[in-house]
Figure (cartoon, each protein chain N blue to C red):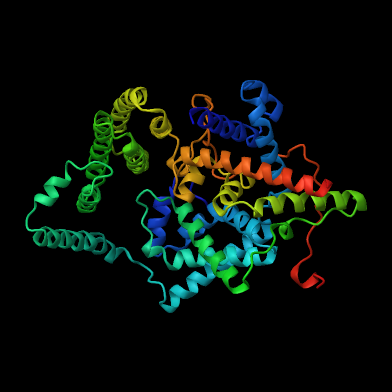
Length: 187
Length: 309
């Protein structure tokens, strides 16, 4: 049963003391953003499910080394997820196109509608992939996952002001890439 | 630079309101007519990206089975002895051990350096000075050696005061380029202080009034620094001001009986008193709101065994 009064720090301390159930509460609290982040980065939902579980397993195994000290537990989980994703792609030597993670269209949609949807999705994902990694990441976290600026700052190790400026630049760059893609398609 | 920073702030605020379902794109553009031409293409790019690329949350079945699987695995490891059942007995020692190690290291450094003058000289160091890292290291050592939450709170507040004093000294010395480092240091300490104060407040301990009063003084000081800071440093000071106000709002909510568990790190529980357009302050993760971008209806994905190659 969830204990709404427990902070992350309290649950982490209890989990560090060996209380598995406390870690379960942290799992419930953070599975959603971690899973959705991994889902954006991976091309396959099953792989995302497997990796999400591995993130929490690894996080628990190294929990003794976690110290709050201004670093929220969610940011710690995010770092574990990023490290596992890096290991995953080192083995595969390429990052799967993000559009592979998108749902297949409804069977009711006509072929033209499906084709237009796929084209637009392809344009947007290609535009995103051409951005520098920091821009991609801030768009993933702040725009696609809709995490608050303060959380994005904690995860990326930046102040909220820096995140806002980074987001502004990233969206400008994305917009330019989208226009470039549209003109190539029209031409 | 100031205009670009202002647009970045407005962009973030609009995105926050649209994602929370509090405003549409058109309403945001009407709210900021001078910035609308710059805002619109960026917000459209953001909304298009969300509309096509927002991933689905984990399914309920997966959520339940994966949690059960994970906890069973951890319990099995615990029974095998891979994970100690109770670590509390050694935690007190482990809390002190790095303190003694650090103290020993610092003593060794002091001896090697020839005297403790290094430590004394570091006390006046400012961001950008060679000994500034020594100064910050000594502060962390003091925090490690503190054995009570009240001691931690007093130290964090004192160090936050120091960061602001450093900011004033930097301004007076014409070293505006180092101001951002002082502000970031202040924000880091403030985050730890608020988290600690919220925990103390929720358990009936701590003096939230003292911390709140200190933050009030900090805000006055930051306003003064902001008024004298050059344009390129104003963003950092404004952020520190915003963070300070956020901290006071969190403490106010704790005093009103809202549990810190409902205010996750970096977030704030929205109430009518605090919903004043602060950007980035809402629940830790939200499902993106539907946009006007056409999106085809999803069909359930087949399970792994059913998938065709």
